[in-house]
Amino acid sequence: MRVIYNLDCRLHDPPHEILSGQLVDYLESPSRLDYILKALTTDPIFELSDAIEESIDLNKYILQVHDKDYLSYLETAYERWVEDGGDKSAVLPETFAHHALLASKPTNPENLSPCAKAGLYCFDLSCPIMSRTYEATLASLRVVLTAASQLDLEKSNGIFALCRPPGHHAGLSTCGGYCFLNNISIAARFLQSRITSSEKRARMAILDIDYHHGNGTQQIFYDDPSVLYVSLHAENDYPYFTGTALETGTGDGEKTTVNFPLPRRTTGDDEYCQTLERAVAIIREYDPVCVLVSLGVDTYMDDPICEFKITTPGYKRIGEIIGSIGKPALFVMEGGYHLETLGENVANVLRGFN
Ligand code: OKP
Ligand code: ZN
Image (cartoon, rainbow, N blue to C red):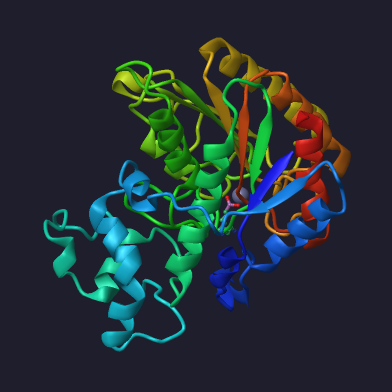
């Protein structure tokens, strides 16, 4: 299987995050990429390729998903923050635009102070913006769109975009949960624009198997019947306020959002795979052109922030079930924080798919 990567993804490298009230090393670290790369290079079935030379108009596709004011915030946040006297380490909000605090929605967000903007565009403390964060985020997206451009839509093959920072928590105009740009959503729009056969958008399915609910991806396609969003994730865990089975979409997009919240602590290989079979049946029925997989392996039994019990062999079964859809698949890296097994778990999903 072809694997696309780029080392500029390493440029986002915050020293710390606050986890359960404690200052700890930033979990979504550049070394995650190194560990996965290392595991994939030891198996000849993976054919690695650097996305560096690819010249895709990233902005054009970003703007099909994210608001323009949010995009210019990401681009300029660090510079403005430092000019305003903010700490040079990173942009981090100190006040959130909580609904209880907002007398009215800011009409001119560009006029807000750098501090206010941080609280408007971030929904948590896990997305510090450093001097080279945006560069890394664009590299991450370039990896994903390069992989998308190489996906053969005539065959039921797979391609893996080995990227970071991840994307599935980033919404129309919000960062959070280590995510800044919603890579997989932008890839879905990119793939739709590759298919110009009819005036109607081609059907895409996004299968999100990260431990956490992809609130951003859900929001982006909530009213859009051309993108089916199906997610398996832990119930009552981060990001806490989204991902119930009652969230099924709205308007024309009614029924094209499907959530499978699963119990924390007790969900192991068998329970997970049974639910994944149901998810896959829904995707088959929808009959998309291709499947985009938000590939998180933070469902692993020893993941430091998650509480599922998936085993390393379990990931191979997961890959096989995804392969049974019989569609071309773009795998996009999301979470997974147990460094020692990260690469092997990812490799097993891809091996199972093949
Ligand atoms: C990103 B991805 C929970 C702390 C959560 C942020 C987690 C972001 C996960 N106690 N911190 O979906 O893997
Ligand atoms: Zn996750």
